[in-house]
Amino acid sequence: MAYDEALADRIRRVLGARPDVVEKKMFGGLAFLQGGKMFIGIIKDELMARVGPQQHAAAIARPNARTMDFTGRPMEGYVQVAAAGCRTEKAIRPWVDLSLAFVATLPAKKKKKPTGRKRA
Image (cartoon, rainbow, N blue to C red; front, side, top):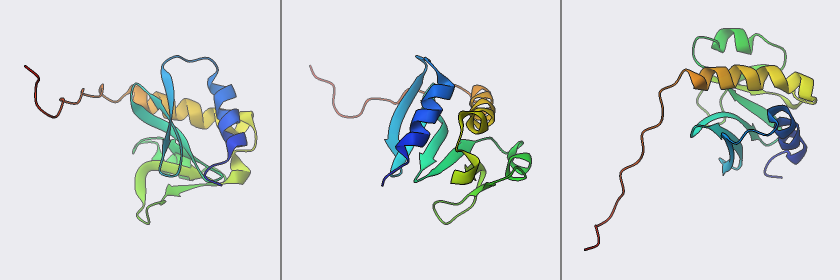
């Protein structure tokens, strides 16, 4: 199982029809991006929420939440929510809202410069 498809469906329902959100398979899971910035995702059967450094302490104090450490190194500003904490849309909505609010504060992503040679 790469990621929990039922959790992905719950996230999709919470997001509704948002043309500014893109799904991308990443890290063996699924990520949701807004404006090219990842804000929420799924790692196996857990929710990953990008909450930012200022909200980190409050976020990990919530039930079923911990600092994201999926690479073996704690990541400040990212939170993993255990499966028990994301079984319903009602449980997911605050994480989605918090994560979207955080990425809205980030500067726009710069466009990558094309690589390779120009054709004549």
